[in-house]
Length: 288
Image (cartoon, rainbow, N blue to C red; front, side, top):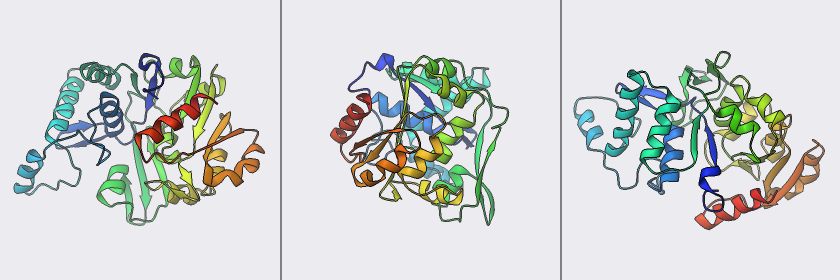
């Protein structure tokens, strides 16, 4: 999107349910990966962290017997140290996110969904796990029994979030996990209502292609909550605020079913294998 639109016109509302405190540091994984990506410093091969980063700090912690299941590079740790110190000084999460994005030269607005405590926990047969423990440490091996949003009933949107949605020309629900990446944002007070009354068109890109997720446990979670594991299931999950659903070419047979949800449907290649694929998908979404 930043390649085909004016970056200063972009506002990115980001899930903070994955935020976690490790090694005494406040880590905001989704905020960081979006910021690093827009700053052009993300490690494209890993899909997270900073390109060319080293892990000497974690190597030292391992020598002390510390469980280092969550990988944090040395330069990446600088971000977390800065954020943690600023939060201790009284800054809000959104203020720190803005400081970091400005320092890294990012022109798009980076908007954490809330400054309030919010934690996504996954219910499994072994008990409740923080999402990062479920996703990174256990690699989604545990059976999914449900999801709990700690703070979901009381969290307020961070400054600028509702305004960004209501005043947008176009709202794009990215092809991320509908339950634990988008669903977290939707659970924050006022956000779903803002999506219903926005002046802009609301478009979602399906993360499910040919009945399977591109990556992550979205398929397992949709099924666990009783939704069909398909682009139709995702459209049904978003139907009360959505205008248009973008589905992959492989799912074109679902077009008429989705249209019966009173939605319009755009068919495109949603598999972002190359950077050019990403640009072409962004163009398709912008033309909806």
